[in-house]
Length: 487
Image 1 (cartoon, one colour):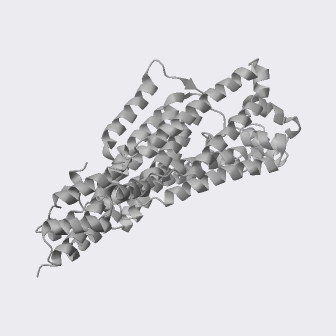
Image 2: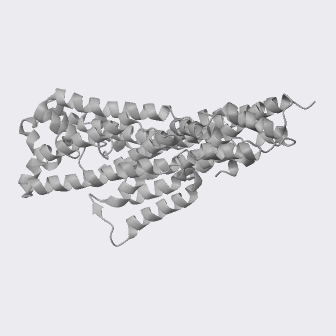
Image 3: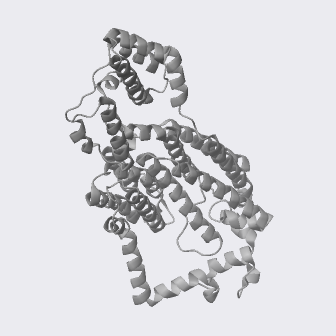
């Protein structure tokens, strides 16, 4: 027995929504939809639909809104036809029922208008401005020591702040879905640029590290979000392909060399992959797929445990990380000095430690929290950390509110990266130096780092701005012929 048309259409929508939630294709609809094709709308209704969607200023949302509106028109039209009306009479009755096309389109425009997260935008700009002020104050001793004009230093910082603000809005207005549509091209381009920065005659080496390559690596999480999206619905094979994409990041991190970036980005990407597996992005969530997703972390953990077991020096180094005073004269000197300035923990020779010297050397960069504590006390440090925690908490709030796989992955990738960067920076400023930190997002000194951070936050806001549209697009089993003609 053939189901009534309205029931069949509703079943297709429900199955399509379920497939979208699992980030799969709507192939399972074929059996139900094989002998069914929705009749085209009459010309009068097509004209009304075209006039209504033409009022929408966000062109990317028009096909989605058009399909939803076409479904409403079709349902109403079929209802009038079932009452015995002719085609033209039913079409005119439907138009009268739906109201004026321009007014309906204006309501659609308001409903589908992208809305920025003003709280996050204000938090980003305010934190970056606070970082600019701190850098100007804390770099005064360095400028006096090096004979640099404070005005020139401030002008340089303002220049990068302006560039970073421009990149923030560039990322915000960028269509983040390009990551899902052209990920192979973008991945190849990212890898090629990284190799060029590493091997070109213009490469820069700073503290034994390829500086520009080390900065370029941090864009990988947003690329990995595109890889996740492109492999959705492919089961264990999709998970393996996502892990294979890590090889490019590992290669660039090794030639930089930048082991802290390698560790942080591996944790971030594996975390993104686990969340995608748990949400059913690769089909049914199984224990085997979860283990496969964390296999790089398990391999790193196994290697670390092997070093602790087989290499006595590794055990000694680990002990010094948590108790640097055990060898404060040599390997543990830096950690001991930091803990003396921050917490007043004494050690042999601590009476010679001068916090002002640390501020002069790099008070606005690697030791910003130490400098703030030395100058203004723990209250200022806690206020600074509260601002960072608020920024991170609001960013994760945005990420968790995204329902689309690509939008959620982009937001989570950006925020996990910043959270781990901030955690490593705080540990370093507490004298627990596991790896060299990259910086404290938006606050610590570094023009290129600020620009990089602002661009990533712009992409996060782009995903927040139009992530709801991605969800709606995933829920469509297919664009009907009517909506497709309005593209």
